[in-house]
Length: 249
Length: 249
Image 1 (cartoon, chains in turn red, cyan):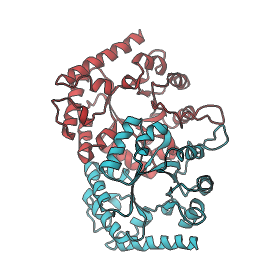
Image 2 (cartoon, one colour; image 1 turned 120 degrees about the vertical axis):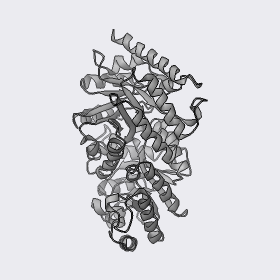
Image 3 (cartoon, one colour; image 1 turned 30 degrees about the horizontal axis):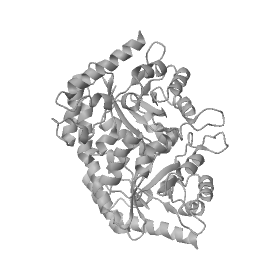
Image 4 (spheres, chains in turn brown, purple; image 1 turned 90 degrees about the vertical axis):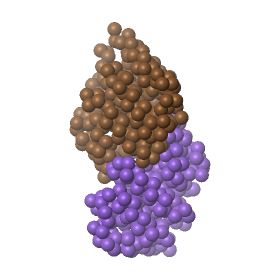
């Protein structure tokens, strides 16, 4: 999965540094890589930083993601239930994303509107790729860290639940995979954040190499800052895919 | 503090049901109540539900909040640090909010970009007004609930830290106030969510009635669905203020 997280300053020299440029950049990345990936994951922060025009670029980016692939909104939302309903309308209904990330601090009540959309995937933050686990790693009275308990609870919240499990804590990823053999994991944290595809799959995928969507963002989309950026992104995505196949053999 | 959380279906009959109507509605509410409040708190979900035009309405709403009052963005953001930086740019720098709510699940590293803006207030979710505390109420190995540990940690993260403490768990509010006598609390959960201003202040404010910004949304902004909505909102805000003064005497 490719994270579409463009910053104006890092757009290729041939792309206009504007929200419209961002949408064009994403379209070209998608066109060049769509046969290599399971889907695309725009992180909302990068679009909100561009204001209302950024929101338009986000809507255009979603439309550019082919229907047969997963359009995953990395938004990490979560509020009281009645407010989360509005976020669900915005992201899953209006923008039409197939899945999104949500933050579990608000509990089941706060995530219910996302979960109620049964055909949409709801990826609950488990152990994220944040280096600092000051909250997630706290030890509970039953001896397990917060993230493990959150994962255990979240997987009972619906058939459409996945977990966000960063490849930056591989031990945690392996433990969670063992506890939740049938839960899809979204696995960020490779590339710029440090882990390799091999690390990620060996720890977060099932023994037969399934159920882990490994996501790379900056290392792919910024593979070149020149006019060949789309081909360069494709080459980088192919390399990552080769790494993935090497693990599965 | 008044929460500006408008839904198209509930706008007064005299206001256009559009993002432009939302901005107009907010402007009229602000004009009618600005001498009664410490500030305004738009929750981002209500604007994102309206797409790019909603983001414009949010920007206009922020501009309509007088400079001498607090413009608080209820956005509950939090991501890896480099991504949170983009959210901070969007909300605190570009839109120009004075303060915002953030979700602590990502830890200190994930909140650092918000905290680094030292003149901006960062309200970390402590015990929210969600009825369901399935994550926040988990007991840690040191015997305290997650929310208490989060509050204890967050208050060490900077001089610009506040806490979100819902008035729906008054015992938790009182405990946290005792532990953090000098920390500003943002206190939602009165009105439609069930608690009274008196409850909120008696438990979340200091003994001399300070440090708690009690926020009401639906009970104020929907006080009338007719053309007198702004005066009705003012009357309701005055009633809440009288309740607050009654506690302080």
